[in-house]
Structure formats: structure tokens, C-alpha cells
Image (cartoon, rainbow, N blue to C red; front, side, top):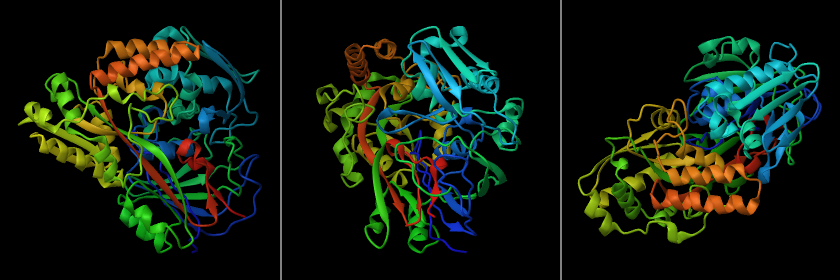
Length: 522
């Protein structure tokens, strides 16, 4: 066995962070390029995820490990590159209008049983997503639910058409999300079995699940003749791995030890262990992938339902101190996305000023259930928030949960939490903003039950106009409403550090690792 080669999976946290590792083993038969054409794979790459897979059904994904494995098993119509550029995946080309898009599929794309993928199957899969996924509003727009959207497939022409009742400018980015991964007919008729990963012929992605021991290990094999690779501007050279072996490793320090000893060849880190790889043959790429903010459970009976308590929490917390927890390497935020986002508010005067003395007058004795993900630096940011609130007199119980448990408790429909440090990987106002509008889980993404009518109005105006000035003006009003109500308390970004050995590479569009682009050097 040789272990000089990599792989990862940090697609971010909480909504999303996943940290992975890898090494190669076995023979490496020659293959043709990997980035285009039906590349044949060779060799094995070993990955480690920081949390277990919760489901193999793409429309039910909620944890970072789900997104990584889902991206390997189910291909989307399009992908999203740096700067928001939409790139082909299953679709070869498309024509977009404000109220819809028509895709022309690549020729020769198959399901994982080798049968042709038809346009009608794609339409059926997207219809299932539209009618069953909590994230459908993020893709199609809140005004296009129910009969407001029609999706049809023309098998003869090889085209899939999506038609909306109301204009929505975020359709293509939404269809790049892994939750829209196309499921073939065997999976569409499998019901709950699809979530177990045991449905043959359901997949459309480059890899097929061939072995599974929940909570421990997974094995995926490259599908022969797969030819729907994404077309990112910076596609790596080399061949795809023939086999991916995935294990669950929940501690970054353990992962770093394995990387240093040669047991794995790639690691993704959000904590201080990344500093161990400043030299010695490792390459480090850093990306501000995680945007952190405090969010509240605003359901009746929870302290976050009281706007005065939300304001006091904002007064107790200092975003600059939060950033120092991570070595002052991030960017203090002034909204729920970072300053690189189009139309983001950078007006710091809209933020509630830190004032611990004022916070103590409200928070003294208030009981708060703080639930956070430990996937970001083992939950160091969560601990800071706990201590800041305790200093203001609150009685804070902190649960530093693994990312899967955090996602289930906070973004699921349990509601048994009061406050969370939300580590969001979305860098766009529209995609992130869907967490503050619409229905609660499981029907929607509004996990905190936020009811901010001014934000909803601004969100609607911003996402339905094609005039850029009007769009940004609407976004400014929307963000002002959200910040004024302290529905979110912006904190700071946290960098993900991807650490590589020589020999393996992958694309990280917009700072997010795409496991389907893993390539082993010739």
C-alpha cells in the first residue's frame, strides 16, 4: 500500500462543514484526462469525513457529509464556478429567461445501471425535488410553489424545460445545488429506501455506492464511461480515482496526525491544526468558506421570541473577539454573508453595538440552550459565545454537537434549541436569505421561525427584478430590516485550509471542495 495522494471534503459546515482526508493505494492504470471525455479511473483514494452520512437521498441532505457523498452519486444539470459563473454538468447548454430555462442534455449520459438518462427522467426527478424538498423555495422562488412551476422533458429533443409563474433570478444557481442531483427511475420509485443508498440504478453521478457500514466506512466505485464532468475554469489534470473509500474521523487533531504520518494525503481544517503544515512538502490553500452569524429560535416559549432578548444577545457579543478566537484570520461581517457578496450591506451603523452592561440588564438569569456544530475548530466559536453571554448574566447550556446532530436539531424540525452559531457556506444573499423566510422545516428552510415582513418584501423585490440598481436597493432595505430586528447577529468568516500532498488535486470553486473533480496525477 502506498499513501501519497489525497482527497477531501470540506464543503463547509453547518449548513455545512465537512472535513476529509485521503490516501491512494493499488494500481494506477493509464486513463485519458479526467476533466473531459469518458475518463477511466485507477487507484484508490481514502477519505475521512468529520461526521457520518445522514441520508443518501439528495433532496433530504442537511449535513456536509451528505453533500459530499451526494455530489459523487447524483449529478446536477449545472454547476457554479468562481464569481458565480454557471458551468455545464449534465446539461450541455441552456437558454434562460426571467421566467424559466430550457436545458439541452449532454448526449450519452447514463444512469448507474448503464441505461440512458432521458429528459423525462430528469423532469420527473426535478419535479420530485420541487414538490418534496424543503429547499425548493431556494431554487424556484417563494412565489413559484405549487402549480406555479411546471417542469417537462422532451425525450426526442433531449431537452428539459422549467417554467415559472413569476420572475426569479436565482434559478440557475439553485439548480447547481447538490440537493437537485438527478435521480433515475429506480430511485424515484424506491420511496424511503433511497435514503439508505441501497437502490441500484438510481444514480447519475460519477461514482456508485458499493459498500456501506453506517457510522464507519463507505466504498464507492467509478462508473465506467461516465462523461458528465463539470467544466470549471480550473479543472485539475490527471485521472479520477477508481475507488473511493470513506471513513468517519471526527477530530481535526487526529486528522492532522494522520496527514503528518502519511496515513492520509489531504486534510481540510478550520482550526489551528492547519498551522502544522507550513512547510515539509505540503501545499495549503485557504478560502473564507464559512460565514458565521448568531441565529435565534423565535418560536413561542423560547427566549429568541423576545426582540429585547435578541438585542441584548447582540450587545453581549463582540464580532472582533469572535474573530480573534480563530487567530484574527477571518473577516468581521456586517450582514449574514461576507463583503464579497453582490449587494451586501457594509453599513456597520446598522449593527447593534456591543454593550455588555446594557446586555446584563436584560440577560441576567435568562436560561439559553446554545446548540452549535463542532465541525468548525472543534466548536471554539460556540464556546466564545457561551462565555460572552455568561458574562452578561445568562445561564447558558452549550451543546457542541457533531455536524450531523447539529443539523438535525437546528435545521431539522425538532426546535429544541434557543440559539445557534450558524456556519453558513452560501455566499449569496438570496440563497442565505431563504433561511429567514417562508415555512419552517420540514416544509421549508426557515429553521428559526423568523417572521420579518420587511425582509420578506425586500427579498421578493430583489430576486424578481433584472435591474441591478433596483436589485441592490431592495437588498439594502431587506438587510436593514433583518439587522434592525436582530434576527441575525453577524460575526466573522472562518477560513477553511485545504492541505495537500503532491500527486492529487481537486477543484474548489468559490472555495468549496468538489469531490467529483478529484484527480490523481499521471
